[in-house]
Length: 113
Image (tube, rainbow, N blue to C red; front, side, top):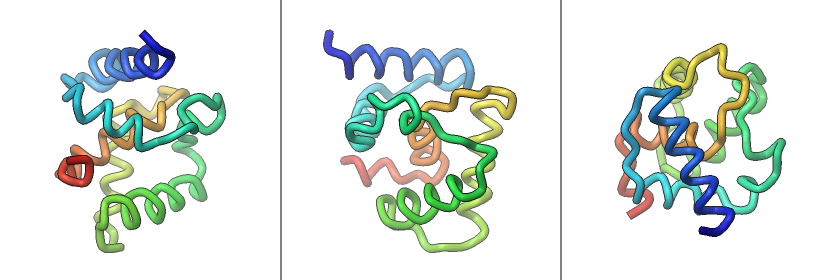
């Protein structure tokens, strides 16, 4: 297994243990690949859920640009739902897992078809 495969296995474990979600491995793999090289960088591989600027970037760059959602209060509600699912006390929220939760929340699996 390569480094990416190891990370995908780690992300799947996070989904099972911390989020209590059974991962769709094909979708998780596609979301992870979509994150690009950021998954290999310690800082970029995680989401700072307490940083409002970071959450705005996720909303603009991922939800609106990547998933094609329309801006509105439901986007921040979805981000907050992903934070709640991951656990507010969980310091290290992996970006790929966070994005996976957002894709599932908004039913945008087709963006990775």
